[in-house]
Length: 118
Image 1 (cartoon, one colour):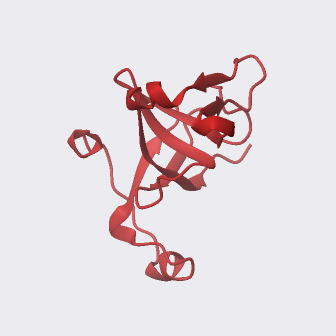
Image 2: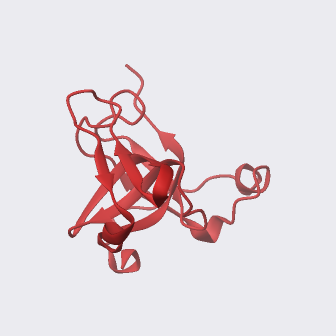
Image 3: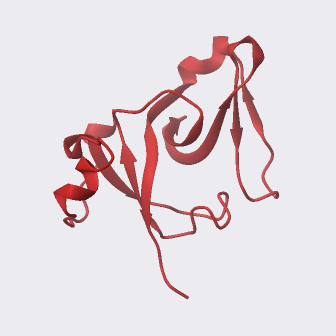
């Protein structure tokens, strides 16, 4: 379960940012991206704010698969399957059949990122 993860830091954002988009701030958590699989969409070491109230694919989501947290674009396809897509073309798409979706926990949709300027 995601709630058991260790809190490493805290930062504050204006309540109006959440209210303007109808997002419950109590459902938002932050994670640090690791790796280059999401290309320029989410860069290595960027902070990503995840809305745990939104768990219905399609979009970019924080997932837990095989005890690993992953940021991926999740697309629903015919037959109820999901395709996990990385923006970096070096990574293959992954097809998750309906009968295998128990392996994937959708923690929430990526809502905002806090990135580096360079």
